[in-house]
Image 1 (cartoon, one colour):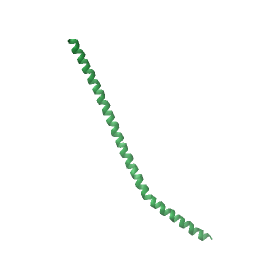
Image 2 (tube, helix red, strand yellow):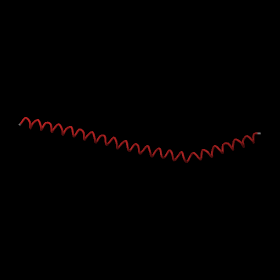
Image 3 (cartoon, rainbow, N blue to C red):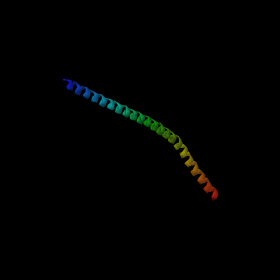
Image 4 (cartoon, rainbow, N blue to C red):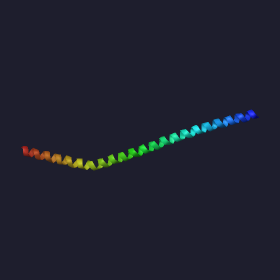
Length: 80
């Protein structure tokens, strides 16, 4: 009976050690998930900023290309 008790205490100790290891692994994984979420949000903000910048510059580029065509046309008329 005493050996049975000793064996059960050893099994309980091993179980506690495994549980602690699993809890530590869970904390590590939660940290990785948190860091990945933060990085995803940072990249989304950056992408949104690039999209906004592109939206604002696209009409400007269109106007510039139109102005360039007019300038070339006028320069061609002057050179004749």
